[in-house]
Length: 138
Image (tube, rainbow, N blue to C red; front, side, top):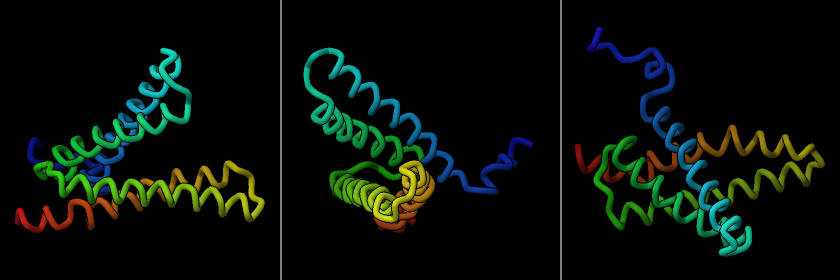
């Protein structure tokens, strides 16, 4: 039994599951930074979210490098990772804007972001941010 893969890895893949779990932890990191900065009286919500985004992004990069994609972190990889992260942020704005433009309930836009965002981010990270490094490793 020890050589068998868990059932869920056959269904959706180990990398995608790890990517999702890191995303959940990353959301906690982001939230803790925002709450800590705002409640500590250090800054307002917008600057706190910007700082939290970058701190959480760095955490996510290292966690996904080591655990999900098993690639040594580097500045070049981080630049690619950040590019995908910012693209995903843009996608979030586009999807929520589309829902608003279509006069859908805002929760429809949120659902689009929740369903499409992580899946597209995973594909972009796997193919672009970590793809070349993974191919170079063999």
